[in-house]
Image (cartoon, rainbow, N blue to C red; front, top):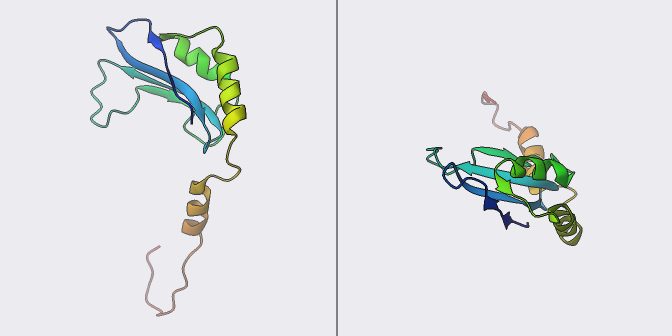
Length: 115
C-alpha cells in the first residue's frame, strides 16, 4: 500500500488528507478527516476506494483530495507508478472468507440450525 499525506488547504476545518494505492483492494483511495468530526473510531469523514477495485483511475482519487488539499501536479503519475510497482491481488483474502461463510456446514447431529 502506498500512502501520501497532502498539504491541507484549510487546516482549520481539515485535519488530514491522504491518497494512495491499496494493493489488496486493487484500488486508489482518498481519505479526508475533518476537524469537527467527532467520530470516536477516528474514521475518515469522506473516503473513496474502500471496496474491491472501486477506484481504478487515479483521477477520481485526486479529484476528491483536491477539494481539501494541495495535490502535486505529478500525483497522477506517482499513483500510477505506485500501482504498477505494487501490483494488485487477484483474489483478496476477504473473498476466501466470504466463500467459506456462504458454504453451509453439514448438520451431522440433526439439530435445528438457525442459519
